[in-house]
Length: 232
Image 1: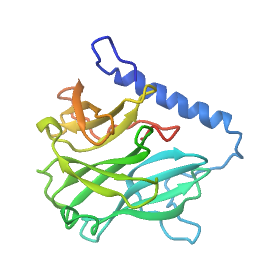
Image 2: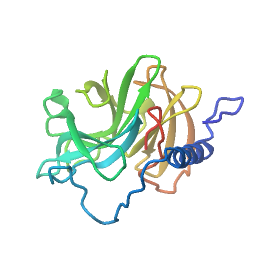
Image 3: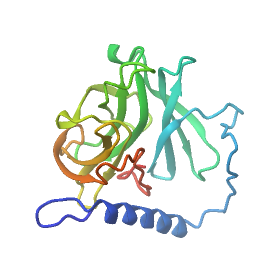
């Protein structure tokens, strides 16, 4: 993410750069081509449906890891599940990396859009997500953090909060080439999009560096990923 002398992140440039890096990585991998058909249910090798809704993908080594929501019948949080693939078509279940039993705060809660990034300095994987108190009440509007020593291990809950006091709903994450981490989330009842610079360990907010498209009601910010240092 290129920054001006004032330190403000140029988000659109960064997102384009990440997309181009993904295309470049796919173009140089020389893997056998596969066909992914739209509007079909992904299943694991055993034929079970992939439950990783609202998720994100991060690449670690030769594998792509897909993290996403697995919900209860009442639409409340059940798991964040992790799957892995080498070709983006065949997904192997790895672990329920976050569960209702992980922390009392998660019982009856609503967890959406989990995104994972790798912190090279700490050697830990950090998950950011949108957290609500229930499946039907979106007034909490908090960001939440969990960490793990391995990409598909059990993540340890670090709590939830409103970044610098702002509402926070749908999110994404990004790690710049200089190792700086960012979290981008819908704020102000989803009318604005806020860009936050993360602390050095990626588990907290250091500063807000941008407000994008104020009053334009944009949700679900996305970016593409190519390596373990980016997420989508």
